[in-house]
Length: 189
Image (cartoon, rainbow, N blue to C red; front, side):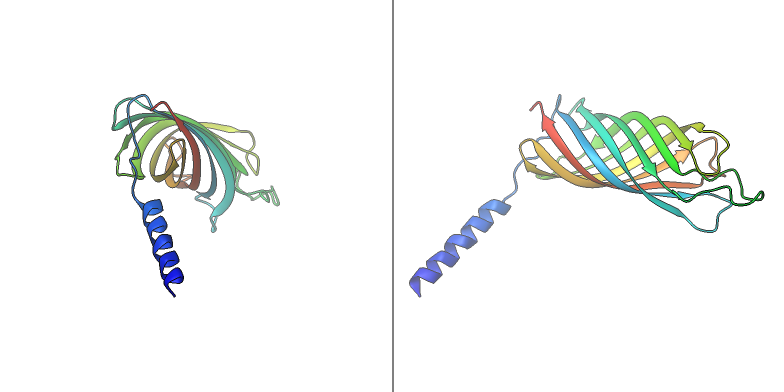
C-alpha cells in the first residue's frame, strides 16, 4: 500500500512539474518559421453555397521588439475542385483555387507558454481555375488572430483565424476566411 501511495505522489509531482508554466520568451530579434495547414472558406456572391477547401501556408515572423512583429506569409488553397462551366449561364466568377502572399505587422502578448497575437498584412491574391476566364490578381488585406503554445525552447504549435478582404472585389467575394493549425521552429533568443 505504501509503495502505491509513493508511486502516486511521484506521478502527481511529475505531472505538476511538467505542467508548470515556462516563459514563452517573445523577445526582440526572435525568428519564427512555420507551416500552417488550413481550412479555407470562400463565399461567391452569385452562389447559394460556400466553397470550403483545404490549403497550406508558410509563415515567417521576426520580433522587432518584445511586442511588435514583422510578419510574412505565402499560401494557397483549393476551394472548389468541381467548378465547371456547365451551362452558358454559369457565372464566370467561381475560382477553384486561391493563392496569396502578404507582409505586415503584428502585436504579441507574452503570457507564459501561451502567446496570443494579432496582425494586419497587405498582399496580393490570385484566384484561378474553375469558371474564371483567366486568373484574377487582386490586392487584399488580411486580419489575423492566433494563439501559439511553446512546447519546447525551439518548437511552438498553435491555431489562427484569418479574414481576407479582396478590396477591389469585396462585393463579388464577400468572405474569404481561413482557420489554421500552426507548427513552427523558433530561434534567436
